[in-house]
Amino acid sequence: MSRISPNQFLLSSSLIGLVAVLTGGAQGVGQSLVEQLHSAGAKIIFGDVDDKLSTNLVSALNQNDTEETKRVHFVHCDTSNYTDQLRLFQTAYKLYSRIDIVIANAGIAIHRDPFAPTLDSEESILIAPNTAEIDVNLKGPLYTTRLGLHYLRKNDPSRTNGYKGDIVLVSSIAGFKECEGLTTYTASKHGVIGLMRGLALQGEKEGIRINTICPWMTKTRLVTGIEQGWYNLGLPANEPEDVARAILICATANRSKSQRHEGAVLPFSGKIVWVGGGKSYEIEDRIRALEPEWLGRENSEVLKKGQEYLHSGKTSWDASS
Image 1 (cartoon, helix red, strand yellow):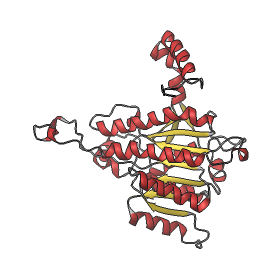
Image 2 (cartoon, helix red, strand yellow):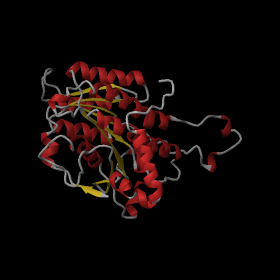
Image 3 (cartoon, helix red, strand yellow):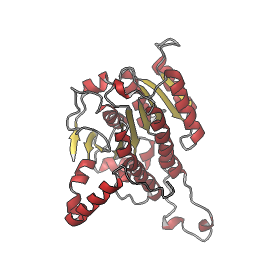
Image 4 (cartoon, helix red, strand yellow):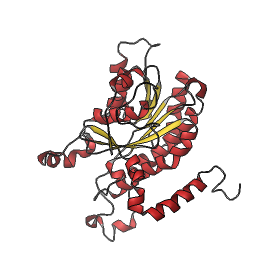
């Protein structure tokens, strides 16, 4: 595990003029992310289902700008609706003719686990469980990433030595750790890591960096039920701005030849950043390095050969091709 200390100069200088598209920007981590991007000089187009909070945020950040210089824009967007997300990206591209950073931030939690014994009855089993967490937390990022790749691929690689842009996916500690009572949420957040692992190698070949954030307990509306007990135990917690900063670490880590976020191993691609107690730690590199220990050395060597074959560019899972 590697602690990453943000380079404030890199965060502030490398985002100037860049175009960022994100989902879930009206409150919590998303709001802080919009504010930090705006402060750093980026152009932001965000989607959310809360029109009131979104328009208030846009008005506050654009209050000193003219119609021509406004840098924050809002598009009503249900992240689980592909047409809504398509409109979000089309609006951004129409405004600026490019997109540099894509962030799949929107997420929900439903604190009534359909697998709980207390909710199991002959009547309840006749009704399909609520899958909104899968729709928003997993299907939504899948849509965001597909659209993001499409627009990032349009960028001219000659301007930045083959580097076309960044996609940052927001998972959770539930993306890699067991979480009793949050089964559907946990499955959705595991899926976000799977999305990153499924696309990171291909993205890197195309000059697109794809990384994932896994925050631990963060002070948002999603944790109201456990918040006081958490504090009573003296456990560490993140502020929304801590998680937003970690997202921007991922979005800027590859954007300078001379500046680095301390602890970030480049190329910063296919990484998982755990955010705990306001601090950021990259954990995927260590998971890979320790593979021979937890999988076994012989198994690891065989797996390596198989992966090299599958990633050689000479294979295809599509038997019809």
